[in-house]
Image 1: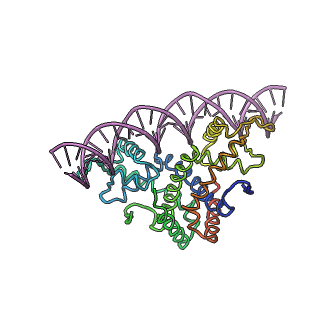
Image 2: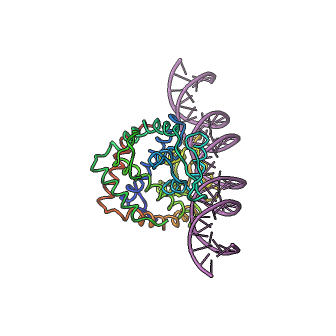
Image 3: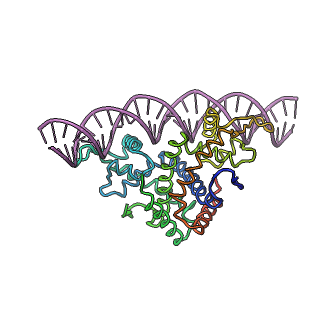
Length: 156
Length: 156
DNA sequence: GCATAGTAGGTGCGTGCGCACCCATCTGTC
DNA sequence: GACAGATGGGTGCGCACGCACCTACTATGC
């Protein structure tokens, strides 16, 4: 891990530290988060994310495609997640009246309650392991960086 | 996505932008990378990562557990990845003489060649979509941040 | 020596997800 | 109206991976 051979084209040391560091931090955090959510709420991170997004949405409801748009998962993945959450009575599905192809996922009272439980502890974990290592100005800087990356790479 | 209700405990706007931004950027990048590697080399990112790590290692060989240690995957996952790579003749497996429980994964000539092909293009993609958005001092700052996170969060 | 605990790697099972494809519906053109 | 193409959502199939467990081996204690 210390000496990147130059016999093949590769990242510079600096690039490797920045990009590889992001991958490493993300991987480690996700492991912790998945384990925490599984133990406390029998829930995966994608399921948690769907519930969280729904709790932010007006009327506690979102179209499946909108859920998929900024998710790690594809539409088919989201479809299955919503199906699982529906079986657990955490969301309901409802056909969209304005476009009968579409469907809404709607957070239930039980879903909101479980989300509350999940958040309480999840927020603490992410803060303890990540956010608390940075000052407010640094968090602002970081957020600005992510915006910079996302604004530029809209393609696909 | 604009108004985080305060009725349930949640991240602050700033925290959400920093942490959520990291998740978003990682997700988007991984999608691009997975697709690129699949199209050009019929290879997943974890397989690519294993080959890359082997290319860095002395003697082009690493123990399975060392491969798993800083990977997203568990030992069983790495075991299967190495199995796949072995079937594709990209690595060889060899029993470790100093500890006969252990095994080495060893990069083959074909594996190194395919890695070279994969890297050529992968590096360009990551630069174009991510690294090039930052100056050298910013990359240094970012790398320092990741070190800060990793140095503190050794537990589990 | 023997017994026990710990570790490296591999495997059966269950599951989650992407891909390709399906159907229903909307949109646009004629 | 009719039709083509695009779009939203769901599904069969295949595969990759985590979990729990197994075997083989090492390390430690007696």
